[in-house]
Image (cartoon, rainbow, N blue to C red):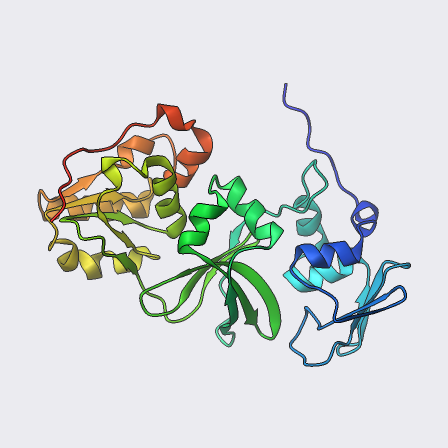
Length: 299
């Protein structure tokens, strides 16, 4: 019998060490004086550290905005969420693992990438692990990105597209920076595998890398809105293998392609009981997987 979810209280959350908590978010103090830890504010952009944590009191104060408090107060401001949503994000381990949600900034907002570097932050690596993707594989195709929205600083896993924009994922948000575009990997093959998002692409490599199924060029759409726009490009390949989502939008795009010509082949049946390849990766053991095709040929 499945055990009931453990309820987390505000008091329990506020017992978390703020210094340790900020470290898990990727923030390190600029200076330490006794029990006072000084940071560049995680809540806005600044050049001089004016965000202080008193570790003895386990309280923070941002002198730039005149606000402070405990862990709950900080997390609500940082993630722009309610107390209820924050408490629901806690699992039985006591670690914050909020439910991922798509994040669309207000029209006046702009996602700005301020730095890129190799993946190393524990929350991002932990997120990948929960999605079944190991760090070595992710590091080959992704970067750790530091980005701002309305002056607030965030960190995420960044997947760079053909135009220099990024698809960004972390445990809280799914978002993207401009310009939005596809990502194409030309590997010299006459066949093409098509995926909706980069997590599906990485899941495919995790499942089939080293097999004949992986011997194709790769097209990651990053948005189904690019699918029909690139149909003519896909037709330049002798065969096109579709790994689109098993939802209404994914099935609709698949139907359009299959009606276009015999070059298009859908392999969504491999994960018919799952929404996408990543759900398959998480839900099924690798030994049960089979290679989708041995017909691809290299030019």
